Length: 267
Image: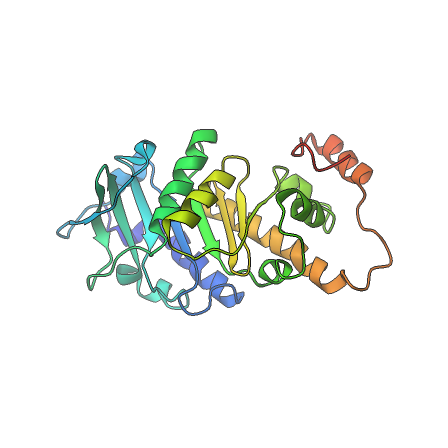
């Protein structure tokens, strides 16, 4: 058995935090990540610290007994890879809260947005048993786009699909978008989870983006693709001489790649 910091998932998570910081998407303590461990991964590491129990109400029933890797409250993503023991930990989810079983040294705790993470994992597991990851960051251009674009799921999805041909292949289920909300509270957690019953990406207006997936690479790839499309939108929306990719062209792409786009967006 190995220390939890030697788990492949923990190393990948730490690398991802630094990558996102380098991209300018996780300034200071902006952003958080969580990863549901498989039974095999749980058995791979040993626990060498006294567990700490934290009370939390309204735990989703389909998460009870599961183990979650999650980043710490206030963690600086520039520094996570060099301070994993304090900035990343493993929790076991229980009916009345969760127990810290590894990491979070110096009395640290999971991100203040933990409830949003739990609700998001729960919602995605209901529709996708392969789901494992929730990633939230402050991707720049998609945040910019929420200042100049209609804040509507279908309208925003259509605009993003129209920027890069591969978008409709990468996220055919579109994106969900929320109006500005206070971060970290129960309200935004519930609203995010509701959107995730129909798609894997939620955009928080004037704040950032959240993506889910079967792996860290999967979820991060969604954010990369959405933000690339948003960047092209922001660089061209006031100077275009073409209308971009048409509905027919997008449908031709879907037909060629065997993709079914979300209904009600293309004509």
